[in-house]
Image (cartoon, rainbow, N blue to C red; front, side):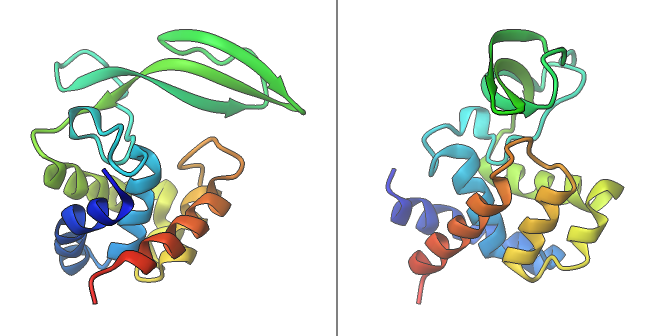
Length: 165
């Protein structure tokens, strides 16, 4: 799927969530585009990479991903490899992620996850400002990638170029 197709297909879901919650549709699309590689890796309609912490109730999937940590002693269900990158460690792992019946369900669940998790309250306060919202998600530790805020800033610009006029 091209970035243009991604925005065309998923903008209506992001807009509905924006109308209901106030989270910028651009921020949602930018984050989802990054997390799924513009829709190429939306396994189980998982549009945001939200982890499933129990891995036991049947609504989850074990997926390969990358994480970054300051130690080589973090535990995951499956560790494929750990590589030291400067002072950090880059993990290639398999971990449990949520799965959904539809992409639309994933967009709504993601918004609810952010709304109810106190860790993201500073981001929630600026949810209508895409770049600031995503920056604050990064600061709160939404992703372990040390470049996450920079990547999200670039994705916002990329999504904005493709929005319907």
